[in-house]
Image 1 (cartoon, rainbow, N blue to C red):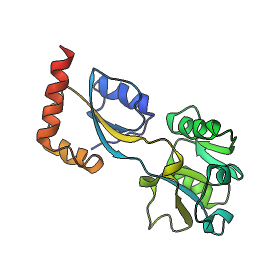
Image 2: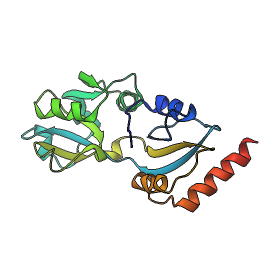
Image 3: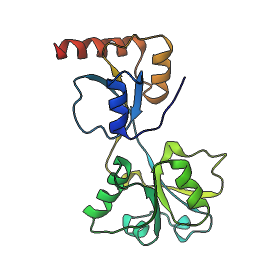
Length: 189
């Protein structure tokens, strides 16, 4: 197993070109007739902050609350950063982005050092590793996004591939994946 981190558009390109067997990404915003797209779970989002941060004790955090503090976030040129920036912009808010990154672990490290606060996918949190952070669920503040598995229609479906897919999208059994691949193949003809 070899895993590679990339922007969602690059993930789709790698899968379509046969450079990756499958991709896991979010925010696929257009049809891809060359690929089979298997929707998975909705992405939960968490506000992370250092221990002792003023928002750590607040019961219900708002976008306006977040915008008052320095933000460590995803690069605004990539989809995760665009979603955050667009959400603030639509509410007439301008977050104070002090650091932009493409990796959740880098973002968490800066937040732990007190550089700012951040909104990240909840699945990027590890309770054992991230003990130095305070976390608040802010999923309701952002548009709904879904983890999506992408694969080529002509991929030979080895038995371990559905096992891996079910880690991200539990509803997709081997048979359901085969059916989706066959349906996608018929639609493209």
